[in-house]
Amino acid sequence: MTFELRQAEISDRIAPSLLTKLAALRFGAPVVLRWWQRRETEQALQWLSERDLADIGVARHEIREVARSRAQLDVMFARWRAR
Image 1 (cartoon, rainbow, N blue to C red):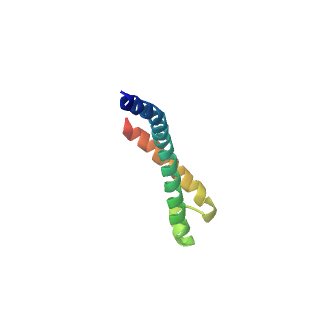
Image 2: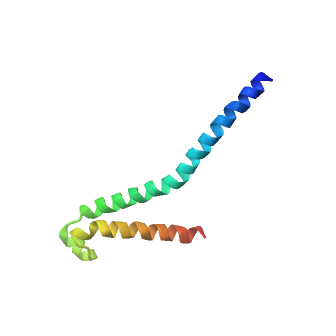
Image 3: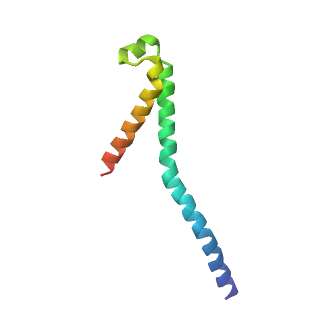
């Protein structure tokens, strides 16, 4: 009986901690993913020459804004697909 009681005490202590970690993962992972995608887009655009950027209609000082808007479009598209 003592073993069963200890087992219940341990699971009662672990469960809230595990649920908290799972909730943080659920809400934190998309934030990290969006940051990572934005960073990758910025880096890819930074490597392009001025001529290549002009071909796609982006000035070098607009790269950060383009990457952010692209990340927002990706989020909207993902929500739309999840329906």
